[in-house]
Length: 562
Image (cartoon, rainbow, N blue to C red; front, side):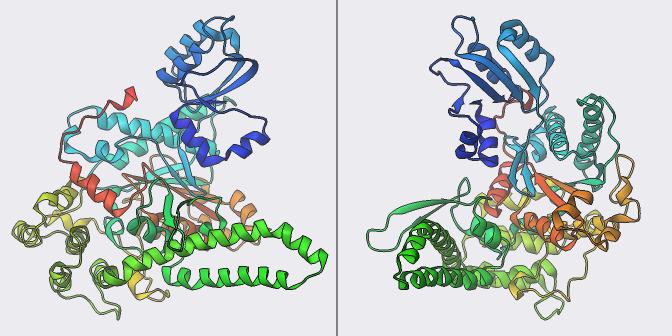
């Protein structure tokens, strides 16, 4: 099997080498690199329709006598332009036994989360330096095409709507997606126009909920990615003892313990994992206590399974303890301030009268680093719908963050008011009342996107603020997915398959807390599966660095050339 850089990453998210071996694929190689010819073997090419990948394919079959493989079965991740298709036809048509576009130009990050493969996505969408270039429109077009491949993979033709706001970014993308959906379903293999399915696609701009991007989250996955140096979903840790070795663990869907724990509050995780460890070790001890031959042979068979189970538990206990070691000295005190600023009320439900008084202790505390102080200042600004220029300058000067001040000032490019004005007061989303829900005191904030998901399913989104680009799909026309909740069905999976689907796309990055919301809402509304996606996944630190870079010119290749 031949892959390019994009499809290598795509395939690694979908399956393992053992899965490919089971399907009879023995060798996986990069189409860009020089390879030894294997003329007796057929080759599957899973590649993107780009000049570089197509050239790699053509090079393998320049002449019949020097062909690297017996034949080629070519699968493109997306629509192949005529120019490239004609180039293949002219060069190696006889060697190609199959050529198909499979439309999967997105990364399935988790079972209900997807991302797009767009370099510098945040910068391309929001930087004022690209305002007068065609790059912004080009990047929206690429996004639209990629979102359509997601809809095609899910076999959905959703009603497309967007959050209207000061910028036309969401409305432009929504219209491009609707147009691309029309084109796709006119030209699909069945050559018939597919009616709108029981699904809805909502497009939202990142500035819609800035609070969730900078708040310290205390659920396991969000907290770990925020506080620990996890890169490419890989967590590094040392084994116990003086000669402890450094080990790596990949946090992925195949790890059932990770999937079970990732959305739980850290307090529950710290309690549950030691219990699981205790249970697993008591099982092995109980088995060791029986000395009959049959018991020993059973233990030998089960031991690798126990070992794997225990090693997973040890990894997650390490992560949880690592998080707590960062949380206890500093973050715990920060969280109360952040929650009070974000919600405008304290843990007792009393209104915060003076946000600056809440903020000051954080700014004066020398143990908090500048990132945490910037996050707190931003929450103060978001809670007051902007501040005065004089106040902002004083804050930046007193906290000595002049070199990082663009992490605060540049939020204006996301249409988030930094300096207060009358216009800025208009754009707050009316929150659902969650006062009766049980929560931890330091985790009272709920991402705004969760309210949007629930309101969409219950058909409560105002069509003036959330206009459709297309005809409203039948399931969402008033009867809604709510009525479907009362119908008895065989299983959750069957229920979801015959129910509705809500797809939410955030331009400019999605947070781990928003990803968690998709699972929580799907669990609460059994008849509707919520899928969430974005250009990329954010951590607070990554986002602040990206916001800071918006005002600086950057050398980036035109999106169409990549």
